[in-house]
Length: 419
Image (cartoon, rainbow, N blue to C red; front, side, top):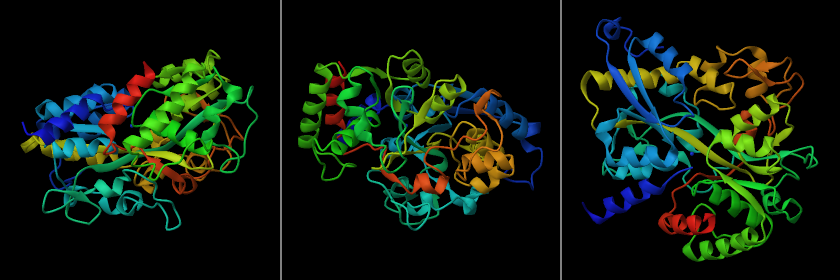
């Protein structure tokens, strides 16, 4: 194994946390059922999605959900063990350059033309910030020389589908509500007055950026490029963070959404890194948590669906069916109800009520109570989604989840800090 691939596999081991095609051949999958093995995380490998896809497509799906690090490690080292991979765009460089995934033909993607500009140009609208780091459009197109870039070709490295922006949540029983994009700040994570009540996500490509944004917002240090932090800057950042930790500033580092919910619900923390479903869950349990819209901008992530380099024949055809199904409308509406977006939202709109669309995508007050994917109350009448509309939120991305050139060193520094 050459040194470059060995290094990428090392990264994979540590990385962690972010209509049917072919109507002209009806019933082909109903007559001969094929199984598509999907490796990914619990974000998209949900039982309700699996059941609906199998019903709509007439194929079998085998879901293997794991933690972010385990998913990437297995995909990078054993591409024969899966047919489709679902995770986040910061895993693309590792998978592509280890040869674990194959190009996807755009001509076989039924809804390609409907996919919005976010992953095609880097901006959801012309005035939007692109965001530092691995903005997904930079990794989308496969070039003739085998590299990845934003130069358009007929083949791509991943299917763009689920995506969102992340920030932090805070308990308004303790912390007075701020003003979105004006007073809410990543710097709050390092405020002295919250010492001992701060939680952070335990993921080098996520928590690292949360704390880097916080340190910069507090003017404790600055970065030449926060999407490409140097080793020297990492030394300075972790020296600062270690001093905070020694003073008991951090209450804990969570590794799952349920754990982050428990941190806040039990009053272990009053402010922490959070993902959208955790905020919805807490609000549904009458824990008053606001999901901040930081004035510095969000940390963005984009889901990727990738085709294993080992998948061929009829199973590959079925995998394309599943990829197309994800953009067919129903799945996009399903994940909207837990706060996530889909790359062709107008098709998902057909499966959402007008009230749901107005709340989740347009940023308008909920005209009625809204249920989540579990059927339980998620949004109360009159509430407004923090950060506003889809366009507003994705126009304010500060940095994307990223595997930096300094990743190996950042991983070392992160675990020294955690432990």
